[in-house]
Image (cartoon, rainbow, N blue to C red; front, side, top):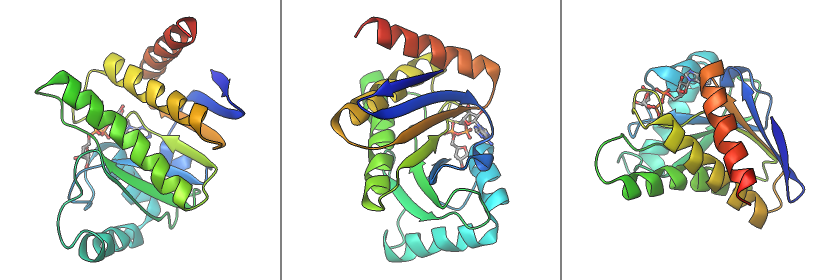
Length: 185
Ligand code: AR6
């Protein structure tokens, strides 16, 4: 499913984000930036050990040794991946005040775009941030992700956005949420 938004495109597809050929892919990381399971593990494995070194450099030089806060994003090269850049963001762990969690998830998408714009990136693939290990309900996450992406594309001249869903079931949830957004426009 693909929609045109103000001259940019937003596409939903089923796939493996480590195979995407967009300029950037987004990693659903954790605050340590030292890798993990899920999409984070897959990206680190496919990119090679230089990615971990680049993340360590960011921790030491840009974050003063601190963790990356929830909702924030940083960018590294992508090494062995087909993409050129990896944008690492930390999604919220489900649990607590819903409005706050939704705002933090929206920040992940917005701050990823901010990193992308600073590098002149014109195409980007997102995974479904927070809906795996971090247990954010996927129907709610889809609504937040798609609303935030659409708002960004309406306000900025960007290019191509791909939501890379890892299963047909996840795709269906995002497609239903997108259709609902389009119907309400
Ligand atoms: N391509 C696209 N999507 C994927 C891939 C892939 N190769 N692999 C998994 N997914 P998760 P989170 C989907 O758990 O919930 C890590 O350990 C997956 O099916 O990767 O934000 C980090 O280090 C799900 O729909 O990320 C953190 O500690 C989505 O990606 C923590 O998990 C997100 O699931 C972050 O948890």
